[in-house]
Length: 299
Image (cartoon, rainbow, N blue to C red):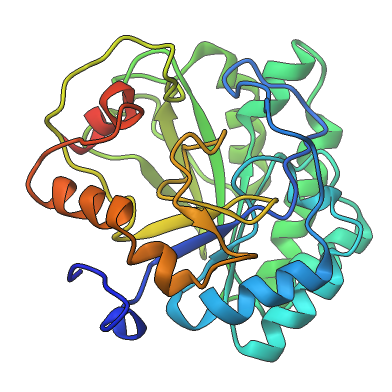
């Protein structure tokens, strides 16, 4: 993607733009640090204003940065706005709150992809039987096969102890997936070479290791590296703060606030431009980026 500026910004396209409709979650996973920011829900009015600005430049909108999107009481109205603007949606959920009403919402035409973080169940509920939890997700998946065969669904297991093998705690879930969909899942996988396994239709199992969220409290790793922040994606936090990356969960790199500035001015700002040029030249200019271990996955 070319360097952004107010003059050429309208031609730019992002693969994904994250709009954090809520930073509140119903779970507290060990691999996902608690949000330190003020808790809140994005109003329908604010979402409409933000969507009007960023919707035309996104291939898809992700209704998530932190928080559980199914907690939003007006999720249906947010989807209405996206459908009216022809915006495609990407959603990540832990699936615990999946009920008939939310299933109906997630089957709407606006959705391009729905991801379920299955690893969150084991992390929060230990050795509790996952049958009822998985059955809700399975029933949604089977309805999608019939009603939305174009919908991509990912079952995420981002809890591998080692990039060359599956976590032992996944064994029961994997057996239930195999039985429900009549497949045999590879017993050994190296996520450095392959992260995704097609189960059937547009349903995939997505593996990965746990990662450490970047923080200014972590030791500096160096100033060399590249990232897709501000080239393939960026985020808008629940209060309107624009951040360059979906891992800047606390708004450590605030580029501006979309409630008081245009998105063109924010992404064309000196700070944003310096980051983009740095990534292009293999240089990490921000302190948070210099402490981000996720960048190792791009090497």
